[in-house]
Length: 170
Length: 135
Image 1 (cartoon, one colour):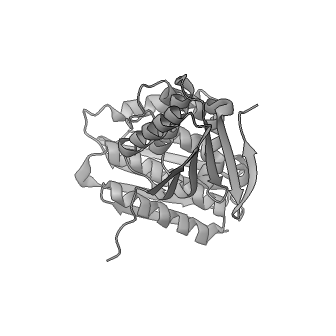
Image 2 (cartoon, rainbow over the protein chains, first blue to last red):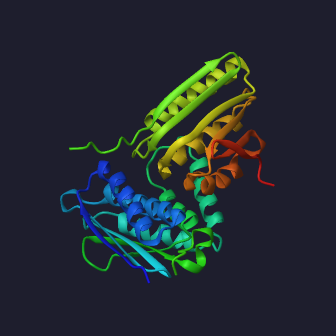
Image 3 (cartoon, one colour):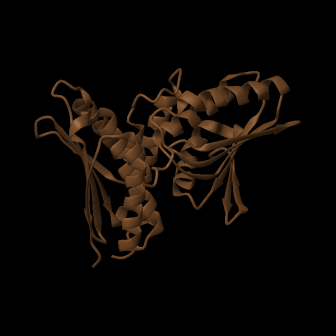
């Protein structure tokens, strides 16, 4: 069975993210030969990295790892945060909010509704990227804040929940 | 050394008579696309209101990727179109089904657009499907 193991450690710079998205997409295509999965994992990686770069503490950079096979794939992005930063707790709260929806489409449209209700579409995060991962990627999203000053967010794909984007090499 | 890809798309605006179209090409993956996209939307909207246009076109068939921040701008456009009583136009978005983010993401945007948002999905360069309000 095909397996993907990818580890990247990058500078916490916005300009790097798209290069990583493309690299992830190419690796997924090379291993699984699946166009839908290629796009999805690229999107998931990019959205997680955007959050990490936005809220991380710069000098330590950001790490991305992908592990998986034909049945399950996990994208994990980790970044350092200041101890006083509210980001980790806001992240946990947002994930709990997302889990309150059985239907990822409803979660995503509810997140869009929050954007709709604003006066301006300022890019301050309301977790739309996470909702997008939940809806478009049908991912289970978790975060780990057990280590001090480190936030790790993982998005887990399962072949049986991916529909058209299922890992076809299983 | 090869440069990193630009995170801002190329933008082309074409307007003549009662036609007004904005086309994007490339990537839309900035942290704050609203800084330039919202003024673009405001300008197109104002033109449509002033000229009483029936339709504005947004062509994203050559936009290979857009981030969540870009989606927020599209929501802003839909809201502006619906809440301004002077606006009579429909927003027609030209998409390409080859871009997964478009054919997966657009159904959610349609929830907000009602019959004023029309999605034309192209496949292999040809119009494959037109969709308006979610029924």
